[in-house]
Length: 629
Ligand SMILES: Nc1nc2c(c(=O)[nH]1)N[C@H]1C(S)=C(S)[C@@H](COP(=O)(O)OP(=O)(O)OC[C@H]3O[C@@H](n4cnc5c(N)ncnc54)[C@H](O)[C@@H]3O)O[C@H]1N2
Ligand code: MOO
Ligand SMILES: [Mg+2]
Image (cartoon, rainbow, N blue to C red; front, side, top):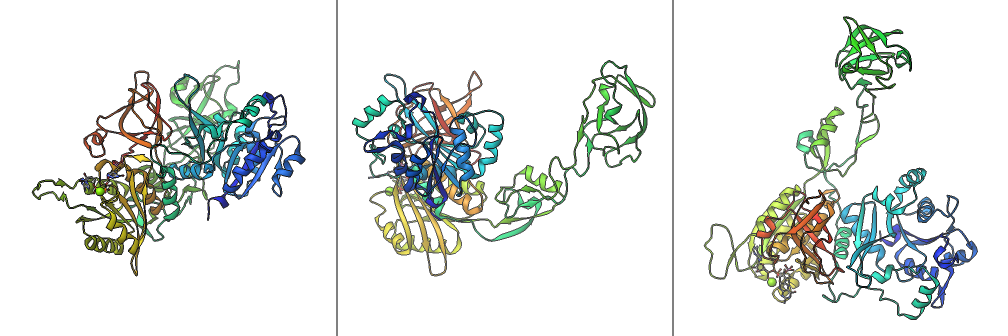
């Protein structure tokens, strides 16, 4: 299914146009058309249909929307973009909704594609555009553009609930969701035209180029684009197996776990104390009430006695709440404890206090864990709490890997002149094992076409995916390309990133088998960065789950040099600063072959394509290694 068919476009044209003198912004003439028509032209090629959210001049908007509907807000009173988004989500017939304001005639032609790639890679519900803005003389800063968003249509109930609270700010709502931010380097493309003066000014200036110009690396593919292509091509393995619960640790669930029971199965006490009927508690102004203790309830030994007015039951944590009781007084809150009585003051507890309800953790018939979940220790416990001892998981992935290069020597061999020990097979072994794959280490393959072809066909017969390192850059790999062309469809990419500029990706096929190939660059750090950004999300998808990337913002403790036009990944150490906020420093020399600065790192600092030099104190994005690298 193409991305386009999954996306409905929504042009937000429902505002009052206050800054434009209350004119209807979308209908303002601009370069021979109206603003909304320009936006329509940019969105239409990226989406299945485009609908317009407008609250005035509906016939004029209908003329632009054609067969698609024009949707006025469901909420009254020009409540802002979230109200427009709400009606858009209510209408949305596809899985995804892409929004853009009516006054952004230059929006990027690859907006949907790039937002979707990030949504997939980071497993989020929303993806937003971000740019680096530099106003005259000021330091460049990150600017998010919440009205340029790709959202899952399934978010509607969450938005309804948010609007019910009376809140209206888009940024605040997004803070409650999982959001991917995508850096675009065409700041102009997101510039909306707010005033009539700006409109006249733009009428004269040339339109920004629709496609990105990558000055640093012309022809290089953006990272998000490569991630999207890879994720769209690979699919989860179909085979599953049933395993005893403990053996399912770190495996991917192949079926939803439906709870056969309520957990807890019965109402029970959260405290050691006295179970009572709250109607018997003393009202305000009344003297303390003394209850008669008529029995004891233990966990596992319920008490069947039914307290009457003024009676209670001594109860232990976890014991079933006796019939007729609705609240538990913790024993330390009693005013006095007698031989077989307890005295309670007004206000000591609320009605319903310390009562844990049947099904409050999990409801019978509900989905306790969804398929695709990686089984962590908490998940094992949760499944055990349901009394389930076996689960279906996807079969493990088999991943073959080898290093290429005549200069490589294996451990135990003498290091001849001009040679290096093969380290990539060790980092790859570690990363693949951490990911939960069955690994097939195929050793070192010489720079020889026949040997390489034989190794690839051998790997293809035994593995779902093949990871190689080395031999993918410009000249030396020419014969590799020929082989791969013969036995598969493999593309060689130059990526707009560093390290990890060269990458080969595609499928190897023999008469009976096929396997995905990730031809990683040879430099030891490039291998790891390429694995993390491209192979890992793809392998996780094949395993039946989705990659999560733990991204966060941290303050850079020092200035960092950065060339605009490519994404740079630098090794860093993130820690809490003196004020408790996250800060990051680089680990030293950042050459693609320098592994020592990788071993010290706990994160990668991501310097986006459009970013230039970073000043000390500036916020940067970091990806946590998450125990993988
Ligand atoms: N003219 C150009 N040259 C290079 C380009 C380019 O665009 N134009 N790209 C550079 C970049 S960036 C990288 S990264 C490397 C990638 O090269 P290959 O994938 O062809 O890898 P090799 O040439 O085989 O090796 C590169 C480097 O890494 C060492 N290496 C390789 N395998 C291992 C291993 N298993 N363990 C330890 N070290 C390994 C190898 O000895 C080389 O030093 O190309 C640049 N050149
Ligand atoms: O990928 Mo290379 O390591 O960018 O130098
Ligand atoms: Mg090379």
